[in-house]
Length: 211
Image (cartoon, rainbow, N blue to C red; front, side, top):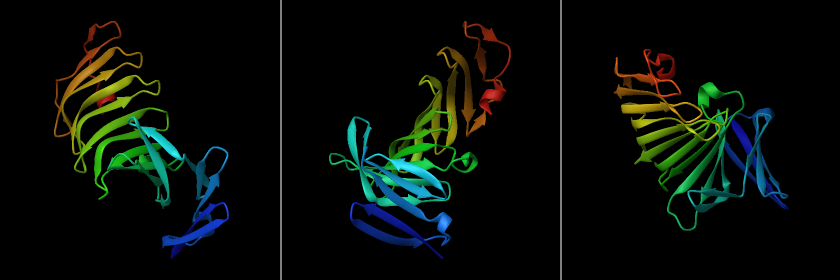
């Protein structure tokens, strides 16, 4: 079974065949938007827009129009920077598929061997976003989760996706909300402290927040 990917750029037409499904409604097509330099990818009846350039980590990244990839729950393209050795994987999640992808937009740096390296940013459906550092392909370091308004929601150390050590959570308005410890991704019983917005300690543990 095969799916046809087509790229139209002015008078140029390129057809690439990749493994997948042959039904026309599952075809992944690309068309340029010359007004604002967007490339629009059509997959399963949904549109995914990719800008020509990205301003990320104080560097300008350029879209690679030959790098489009259609996956079960997202569509992605690669971006390159002339002054940096890494590449950016810019993935847009499929509508209504949060259980599979858990993100609306994900920007992940990787080496030329496709190993994630540096900071990965995942934007969720509600506009909140998560920043996760990667070292040699593994999540390692302080992960920060932000509210849609840009304020920090929680932060803490993760090693290969497992929570480890002290985590802190914050109200959407910025005040400290809770603090708790984890070991091997498990909550350390009795370690949580919860505050109200005025800084008063509450006598409950934030189980509904932590789990």
